[in-house]
Length: 400
Ligand SMILES: Cc1ncc(COP(=O)(O)O)c(C=O)c1O
Image 1 (cartoon, helix red, strand yellow):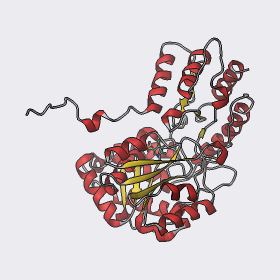
Image 2: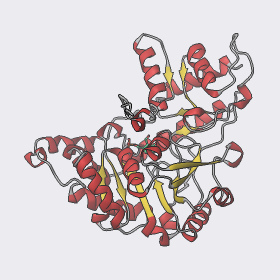
Image 3: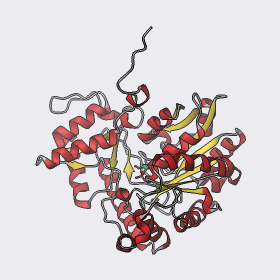
Image 4: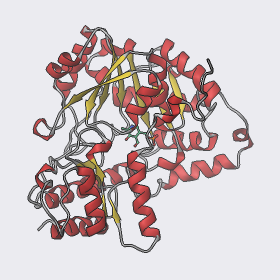
């Protein structure tokens, strides 16, 4: 019997393209073709990286120490700065040896699941979820178990829901607060309750804290290991400079965790990518150890835009937009707009609705299908104030 060899592996063939990048790419292509598209699709700040960070990078470029391979897990000074930041913002004391510097938070997410999952291990994933998690869980052989929370519960899952989804194969709880795509932030009490439940059931937690510093109205996103210190031995924290410091293109993130998981992930990284660019690492040291006023000013700008977009979207009948307390996304429930006819088109899914608003209002938003069930649109408000208002007004006119 001959075995038929596939051109492309089943594993890689099963990965879907990032839906968020796809929508943003489509919007950018239309813009390049001269169409006045306003894109709410990108998950990145529109600001320039703060000047003192850029200066640190320029200095690093001229320093021959940075021209060679450095330790795969990161520059010692940066690992120290990350350990200090983890204590400051996540309330967890760690050694620099418990830190790996990665090529963006994305690589940290990938390596965290690779380090923990055996084939068939189940991961509880609060839904709606960030587009990348399902693919990364699948690549690690894991089985994703969705735990859905809609707008009626502020997109926050409860312990009861998690418990109902838990089986003897459940190994990991994914915890993301503030959340992409919803901007929802768990309260300190909710975080503690969920953390205690995870601890009592012997679960690992992967906590994605990349939006940790982008919270509003005095709300603080308490780290799950801060709320439940006993979890520290089974928790991997994922973070990075991309969102807080407008550094998405610098590709600098990290993972922090117990020695065995970190050792495993560091071994993987030593074969996969080695050290992150030394220039970006030096820039990240300046970001974490330097003045925070520029980062705080960007947060204030996001807050202002958040208030505008929520107020304006809520004027559209059929869209229900909860007020998010973190990140830079709003996630309206648009089910009230489906099944109705707009200029001869009747969208029945949020995917079709996203196409409709792109075609008829030249506004790009990412459909809920990218993050779980249909019936939602994700709008990033990390775009200029004028464009933001104009984009929302186009939708108000379309759905008037
Ligand atoms: C929830 C979440 N985690 C992690 C990341 C990774 O960010 P980066 O790889 O740019 O550091 C993103 C980026 O969109 C995100 O939204």
